[in-house]
Amino acid sequence: ESLRGGRKFTRELDYFDHIRITRKNLEKMMELDISTSQLLKEKFQPGLFTALAICVLMESVIWASKVRLGIPAPPPPPRVDFTPEQPRRVQFRQLIPVLEEALEMQRTPLLVCGGKEDIVCTFFSYRCAVAIDAKELINEVLVKKSITQEGMREKVRQNAVKALKYGRPLHIRLSNTALDWSGYCCEGGLPPEIFWAARWREQDIWSQIVRSQELDGACFDMDSHFVFITSDMDINGVQQHLRDKVPFYDALAIIDIDPGSIH
Image (cartoon, rainbow, N blue to C red; front, side, top):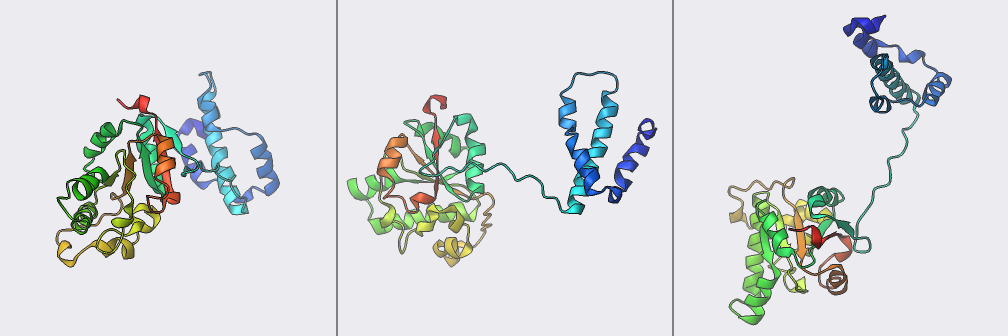
């Protein structure tokens, strides 16, 4: 009868005395195995909306009774991790949700671009990422010798601070290089934890590179700031050449982008 009144039925949802439901009653209700999502897939027929309304009531009663009786919900499905040993192969259009998943796991993403790094870098430039370019480091310090390694360490530090200050992503671009970062992750440069997302978020780590005069106008939004790495190598090249070059390599999330999906 209350279904005809609409609002009266919604009040019954709020005030239904689920305390009267015993564990045995609850088990019988759960054995029915009905759900609103299941009914919504059915073709329309007379009585469908009534069935949906009853189902909403039963689901609310079952949920409240399980909480009251201390019956745990079924465990969530196991989360699929992705590590250097378990790289995640994705299409380019799937990159952002997978990137967010890696960051939720507090792993620094390493994006394997398979010869398409330029396109991936252009994509992230539109997201205002601040870049540290490994090929530039090699050319300026070792090839052209236009700057000392100490001077380049300071330049790299300034780029990292720029990303930190304004809550922007920090993009470490490896190109096709296997640069040994030990020369830049040291005193006067970057802490090696910049490659380890779980530790980089801690203030006692990232604050090591910030000078007092760089605090003016800073917001340090760690919700929007994150570090990610790109490589122009394929997955075999990454696994073969970067393991002993990138600090905390085993803590990375390796995301292997299908190069055929990058246009």
